[in-house]
Length: 460
Ligand SMILES: *Cc1c(COP(=O)(O)O)cnc(C)c1O
Image (tube, rainbow, N blue to C red; front, top):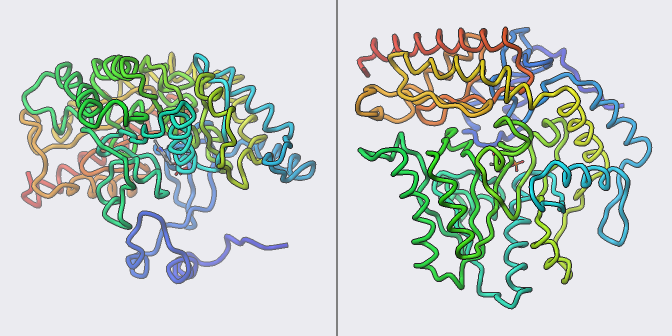
């Protein structure tokens, strides 16, 4: 039996990590001098590192541990499924019980006529599926020139070539010759950073109407789909003005452009409903899912597809699939995760109990001298730090405050991520009120220390 030991000294683990492990989204050379933090255990909302330090995980891992850590039911289901049927594919006129049960459950939970699921092992892969699916849809309808997918700057849709092309992260496009052809990016509805003197409602409309302009410029006959996160996550938890989504929906309807809602973060309770599309009042043709689908316990993602799209795709041989599409162990674990979310009323708590409690305390952070806006929907929130609240000014060197604050949070036992000078949270949805008090207390202390440091450094 392979032994995975937690009992080596931390420095030794860090040296081995630096020598042999390439970290995602990291400058790996840095690990030689400052070793990575070794996380050894987790329970509920708390992580423990190899030195025994405990951290409140306000990021839910990477936006995914919705039911919290340490739910042994998921481990038991995985072990049982591995013994019974550890693997089989569904390529060649075969299927299995876990994938059937999960698909039925997702069709029940998904709004409208989103009744069909194509599986992947991640959100990135699912978005690659979506690219091929929407283009195939139009080709099957005799419109193969409808190829262009419109997305948004500063969107995050994953890291494969296709998903990173859909995304609007310039630093990702700069590596490896992206985006792929026939991807077009419009501006994001980020009023705080880009709204200037406009009123947020007006600004939301203007940003949505960029979609219509793009469709007309590129040619209605060439545009296949629009993709967006209901609330941008990795871009900094950007909650759009209320005018934004209704206008986007109107435009997609008018030009019959397929709407893909990337629900990888917003799905499975994050915004207080099963899906962010319900919170934002939109009717997507396809939803991308991953992360909270299994609460991160095992890799699984997918695309939930409408009757309209599925019927067309069913008419051709769709030459696409992954060895692990609908993996039985992943499907069984996801199903158990959904059962727990449902039976324990976790989403109702986000909507009606702990969610509003967190929201009230989070919004009050806007009173801090360093904080401009503090926004939150369900249990995903962001604060924008600024040297001048009245003008919504940016720091001379973007990311200065963010990096300091992130490090202060770590020192104060809180994992909160920074995107530039925005601090963001996406905690496990099972956070108790006492955890919320601790989160806010540690965040406030970290903001105070960041403020003091910026003053001492003469930045503000
Ligand atoms: C994380 C994320 C993805 C990519 O999912 P992976 O499982 O990391 O491939 C796609 N879309 C959104 C909105 C995400 O947050």
